Amino acid sequence: MKKYYLPIAFSLILVVGLLLGRKLEKITNSNSGFYNQNKLSSVLNYIDRRYVDTVNNNTLEEAAIPAMLKQLDPHSVYIPAKELERVNEPLKGNFDGIGILFNMQKDTVIVISTVTGGPSERIGIMPGDRIVIVNDTIIAGVNMSNSDIIGKLKGQRGTKVNVGIERKNCDHILFFDIVRDKIPLYSVDVSYMINDEIGYIKISRFASTTYKEFLEAVEKLKQKSVKKIVIDLRGNSGGFMNAATNIADQFLEQGKLIVYTQGKSSSRNDIYSTSRGLCKDLDVAILIDEWSASASEILAGAIQDNDRGIIVGRRSFGKGLVQEQSQLSDGSAIRLTIARYYTPTGRCIQKSYKNGVDSYYKDLNDRFENGEFTEADSIHFVDSLKFVTPKGNVVYGGGGIMPDIFVSIDTSGYSKYLAEISNKGLIYKYAFVYVDNNRDELKNLDNYRVINKYLEENNVFNDFVNFADSNGVSKNIKGFDKSKELIKTQLKAYIARNIIDNKGFYPIIKDIDKTLKKCISELQ
Image (cartoon, rainbow, N blue to C red):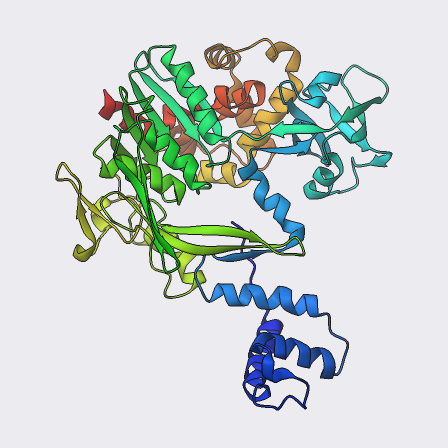
């Protein structure tokens, strides 16, 4: 979540203003009427009437509100009106637009794929098309930012946008009128069968549509006789709590506590499982890491505290606060922390924020430097925050969810050669260029196994080494040998993603996913 920090100048204004306010409140009604106003309003009014220059009160308010919220906790934030739609969009599950996934290459918008059934696909926009004109405005070769381009393509449902397209083997620009429509934003990235028994579901966030997407994914896996399921919550920073509790409900017997919330002005609210458990007959494992937070931790905590499945990976972020969003009259909004949530054993996994916001987010860097990402023994919990599950397993509060099975970061294949390639983004760039140059040959490859085989047979890896060399990263024999399998697998996975999206990427990248491989081993 983006943070809005108070500029130093406004901080000084606020502090001085508040100090003045203490005195101004003592002034009688005959001198400006401050007596019946609150301190902040008094200061704003005083500045407005008496300051040497003309002041925009809205500017002062925009600075003061984040400053106040910053004194509370790291997750109570102010969202200006101009940012609200963008901030809320990932959680709504859809947005209004033309329905394309694009990339910027050499200052040109290139369509990677069109949303199935979306407005661009319906009128014939194709992967590989270059969008060069939008509503008579040239957008190619003019250094236009991604946000500006998106702003021109997005718009209210039902409105029309005219785009000019350059297409290979076509000697003139093609013009299309696209009627914008609702475009789905999926939070379940992929679901597939890892083997004959184990299914895999990747959830990137908890949005308004996540629960529905999850049920559809489970039904698809059940049709393939799934017996065990892996839910990947790594990198999932949270979202709507009810999406997480509804998914947890599918794995638990009726009457099990999933989570409860409580705050100063919010009485305790217990959420229990119902009788609808679609997944009660499935073994379950949940993958987490240091970026798994909030709703991810609610789901992982419910499974762990009810002894329902195994948690695999590294300690989660540690966010145990519940926010309520309230919209203000000018279209801005406040997300205010109104309660803490507690896992079924009674633990709050919120980590400390007593040293301020900067220290709070620096905690992950401190964990890394302390060796926590490589050694489980470097993690120390306070005994006073010890809790016990119904089957006698010890769990801890106060700092995220500690997995049942710890898996360190895999550094075995890393080298300076790989680091240079990664820092320049060459694997991703090559994957895009390769697909863009070979669309006719690749367009009929419809599953990851076929793509994997094709890329092996066409020696893509050797071609990439030459590509890296031409982009300033010379082949280093020692680093090359150490990182060869990592680079090759990533290449194939990103190329597959550019052909068939995530259903190509995840089944290939699993071959170098140490945490997932450990999880599969435990389930088997």
